[in-house]
Image (cartoon, rainbow, N blue to C red; front, side, top):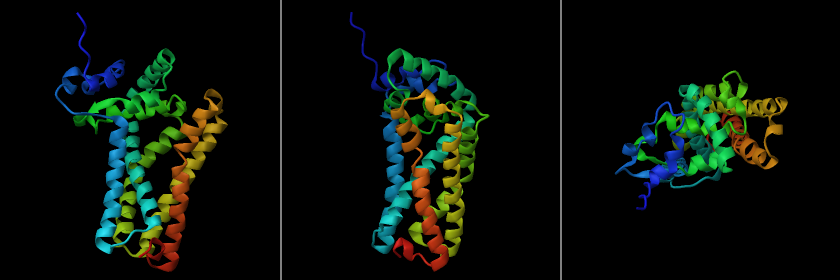
Length: 259
């Protein structure tokens, strides 16, 4: 007799049940009868909603669109999601160390990159805010940079600090850029503090990565994708944010954002 196929949400998560300290979101009862969605779709949807809310609110109030405003809203939205993941890095630090070893073995057994496998896995909608689910962001990234499974490293502690410290200024700038409700010089000062910190933190992370010779443990392709590409927005967009912030202070108005 042929065995019945597992539900989609289980096919995406059954491999994630090993070494779980909290298996609720991969339990068959947690998936049965519930809508499940790929992890990558959840992340993209949240970012898209934040972007559309910021750009749409500006258009609704002012009836216009500005490229620089849109780019900064894009980055601030991404940073808000990243901040939540960084809080999860702190909340599930012991669990991440266990999962890092699990994904390492999984990669050796299947030949499939853990990041790809995790992002295409499905989770029930009731678990989309679970820190245990998003802890695998760091467990899979640790396959390319082991510092995120080691709480003694710069990268680990810098990202935790970012997760707890930057949500407030990120939200302040998101609102100020969209509704221009703060004095321009105040938004500029907040922006200089936030964007300089992000530029500096990311730059030092890259330096620490290469000084520790971690690039010798991964392929050039993986280094370009997971070390350079995934971290570049926190330098490139932050530099744009620094420019805008300085203009806000010097000009004393929001003309740099098209107002």
